[in-house]
Amino acid sequence: MSVLQKKNEKAQQISIPAMISCYLSVTEPAIFGVNLRYGFPFLCGMVGSSLAATVSVSFGVTATNIGVGGIPGILSIFPQCSAS
Image 1 (cartoon, one colour):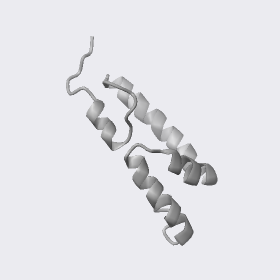
Image 2 (cartoon, helix red, strand yellow):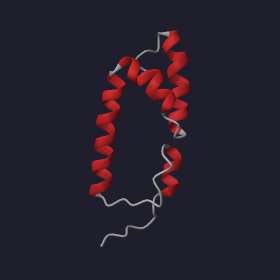
Image 3 (spheres, helix red, strand yellow):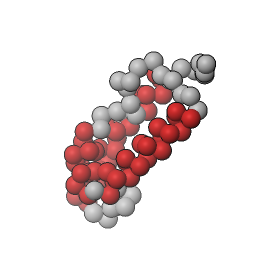
């Protein structure tokens, strides 16, 4: 939404900080400040999450926990595949 509304100053004031917090795994500002307000990014987020989950499961990605998301979530992924 930051790219789609780059000429709207008010939308930029909400979407840029929400985007930064999402990268650090705090998604509430983006969900309630941007996604639910416009609808389109919420739908895109659901589709993108389902595609990412499908790819992760098909490649057998495993993690040590489920509490960390965003960019720090990469740290919780096991470095070796433990496929049975």
